[in-house]
Length: 152
Ligand SMILES: O=c1ccn([C@H]2C[C@H](O)[C@@H](COP(=O)(O)OP(=O)(O)OP(=O)(O)O)O2)c(=O)[nH]1
Ligand SMILES: [Mg+2]
Image (tube, rainbow, N blue to C red; front, side, top):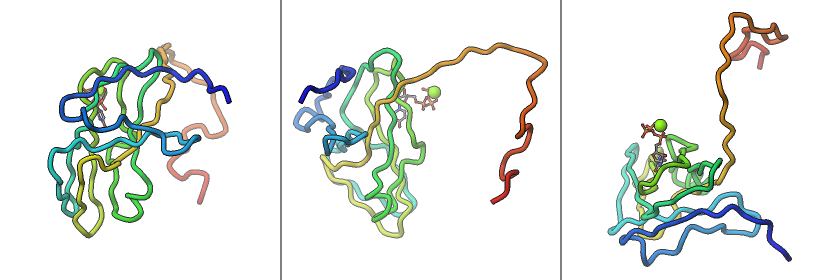
């Protein structure tokens, strides 16, 4: 089977992640690569606490792409672990360490261990726009209606 020409992401593993594998797709058709926690010691995340988890990775994305940081549904369902800024945006021009904000919305404390798959990253094309200013916009069926204007 020939693989499609996947876009290449340059990646640099920082010292605290040298022994960790790179994020990978769990199945052949997975949309997201699982991101690993590059924490030195286990962390206890109390209920309602949020924390910034290092991944130990710096990247350079291909032109015209972003990397979206999203929660893992299993952690959300079983433990209430969410990514509050989801989808987190890794800009094409960001060269710092990728970090993941996680929030424990569950009742119980959550334990984060080194190498744990804490979130997932989805590579996505970016469409940028330019403004064209005007005083007149066309009318539409929706017009100014929103926020539930079409009913339940
Ligand atoms: O979950 C995230 C979200 C962002 N970033 C990094 C990469 C991104 O390119 C940069 C800025 O993110 P964003 O634009 O969402 O944050 P901001 O609050 O607007 O900060 P800035 O003023 O630096 O743009 O921070 C992460 O490492 N993880
Ligand atoms: Mg920003």
